Length: 104
Image (cartoon, rainbow, N blue to C red):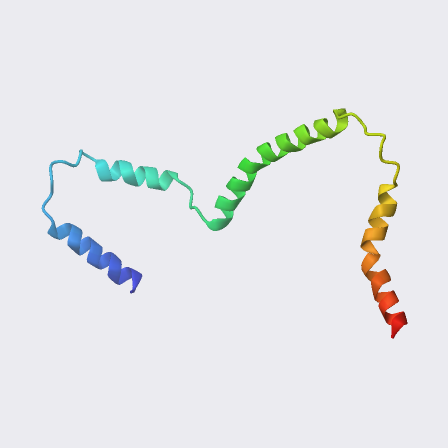
């Protein structure tokens, strides 16, 4: 439906209703003033606000986990080199592919 047509129908329906005394004086002016004060809400501003609100807890969690890992006692039971284990894990697929190619 056309937005202008919908607005015209809404205004016509509102004007056809009798004025009620239940509505406080200058109610529409107060509401319109509040609407004008609010900035336009688009998707980017909503996401930006949500991400900035989430930044504080994320930093707090990061600091807690960093302190936990820094102050936790170091285990001396593991003598393996982490970089060597990482390299073996990453290159495991390549080694399997080479061994499969050599069979054929």
